[in-house]
Length: 124
Image 1 (cartoon, rainbow, N blue to C red):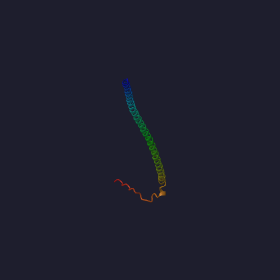
Image 2 (image 1 turned 60 degrees about the vertical axis):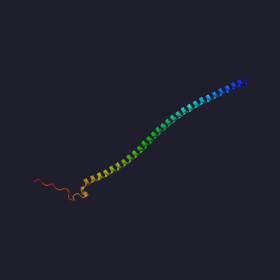
Image 3 (image 1 turned 180 degrees about the vertical axis):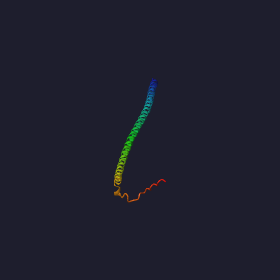
Image 4 (image 1 turned 90 degrees about the horizontal axis):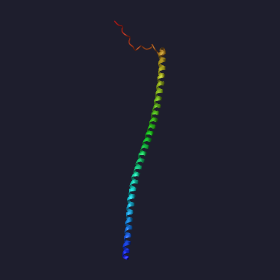
C-alpha cells in the first residue's frame, strides 16, 4: 500500500509540477505578447508626438520668419520714404531756384556773357 501511496503522491506531484510549468509558460507568452503590443503602441505614440512637434516647430518657424521679413520690409519702406521725401524737397528747391533765375535773368548776369549758340547762316 505504501507503494501505491507513493505512486499516487508521485503522480500528484508530477501533475502539479506540470500544471505549474504550463501555467508559467502561458503567462510568459502572454507577458511577451503584451510587451510587444506595448512597445508598438509606444513607438507609434512617440512617432505621432515627434511628427506633432515637428509640425509645431515648422509652423512657429514660419511665423517668426514672416514676422521678421515684415519688420525688415517696413524698415526698408521707411528708409525709402525718407529718401523720397528728401529727393522731393531737393527738387522743390531746385525748381524754385530755376524759376527765380528764369524770372530775373538780369539779377543773375544775363547778357554779360556771350551766347554759346552760333548764329545760323543765311541761305544763299
